[in-house]
Image (cartoon, rainbow, N blue to C red):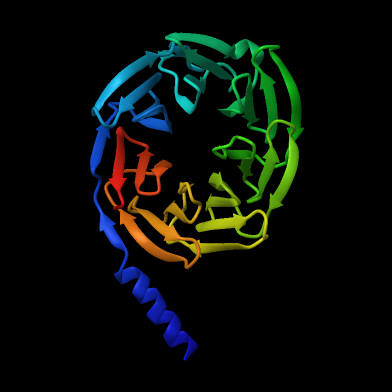
Length: 318
């Protein structure tokens, strides 16, 4: 009897999941590696063509394009750098890109039409991601899974901390920027207070392998796993759960209320919106043409996604 009820429940959620096509398709003309919401109606994209592009989705036009200096690859050829991490805070744009030297990274801040170097290849830092904590401090993650806070005024690291011995995967900051979640190849997610480096929680048990992406809002952390698990944790209550996907889960994001999550659950690059309280599938978002790398909720009803191609899609859920 229990098996029959379970099957009926699964069928119900599949039948009533709404299938949506994009309401807007943005052609960035280059592969978008990362993106973040900017001010007003803008979205900021980092590309593998060495550019930072700002797109106004209400005006439906690019309002700013910043070309970063070209780099030399290991063969000595001059190529475009890859902008792999972007962030936005109080009118400032933070960008991390390849330096072309020894696996080290360049980090820059763009403000008032001026771009300033924070780190270059001369600093010899193998950084993977960088996020603003406030106007004067940035949180950076090393490939070795060291997390560090850097003060832009003093130009010094305030702390460096090794989270575990596994290779770093992803970093997410909550909207208040007082909590950060960092994932690694071990499957563990470490939640810290970015200003102090204090470890708030070590989250284990959902993912058994590399966690490609994390997101954190309110008390909830969601994970996208190589083990085909789309997971979530409640930091305060300790509750955790997951959905077994049919393919590697490359991307995940939470809505502002942290009641629903978006996951890439299949090999067709669809995005599934899950009600975390009931585990029911509410929406299937179609239109992405290659492997997803970033999903963003602007609000509870607007979703953006980028994948390993030129296109960023926007969907309206209502």
